[in-house]
Length: 333
Ligand code: SF4
Image (cartoon, rainbow, N blue to C red; front, side, top):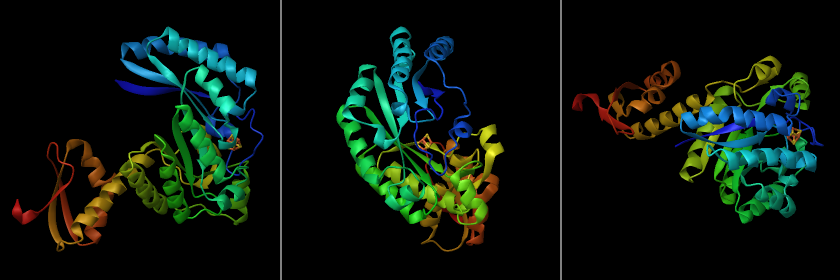
């Protein structure tokens, strides 16, 4: 059965921080905090549509630091979401995102009482230098502690990281991924930094003090991250910010592409093909792969074919059901 999220964005309220990259209003596209009535109305309006299509959904409180909003408001929202789970079989649970230093046993007990199924921690980096430079106001140790508490509580753990922050390096991002793997999350989200107006990063960018990673560098890095997480059975549920007119309008730089995941997946395939071809003589080859892998293998705008050609390999891609990646010299076909 297909699973989805009904995302409800809770803007900046309750968050005492101002991280270097954050303009929550732009990222969440929401200015006015939703009321419990808004949540009930939204979930009621979606129930018939979800049931008809056989889709199950979790109500997802995203956008800010859910567990740091005023307690009464948080429990009203949870009450509305929990009532929908009891009333409609299409709702399977509730998830939220929050900061690592806004998790405690007491908060987890409340969340469990309302049937919270997953918590995503905005860790962003496991380098204390990067966290400090970006004014996150928490340390890598806070992430470790919060992750351990969530795991102990039995609620599913998700972790979110960013790439290309101020003082970040690709090596630090890969180390962050290694640290994440040790914490055994079920899911991960990877967000390459988008530099927005009205943020500290925006100022640093304009003054020339800070440059984010380049697009190709980010694609390469994200391909490595994707492989690392997937090899450790951690699902990457998001790669790159959602396409949004607000982000389009307010972006000053950084990496933002509506098809980023596809491009990264295609880079993963390119790396795999290159590894296979490494020991083979240059020449003409046919790659057989399943229908669903064809476009990933060819790459956006035939990028992979072009890159392989530059390395001396003339590649043709053909469909073969059930095949992941089979490389055959053309003369053997
Ligand atoms: S903790 Fe989250 S909501 Fe608060 S400023 Fe940082 S990124 Fe924005």
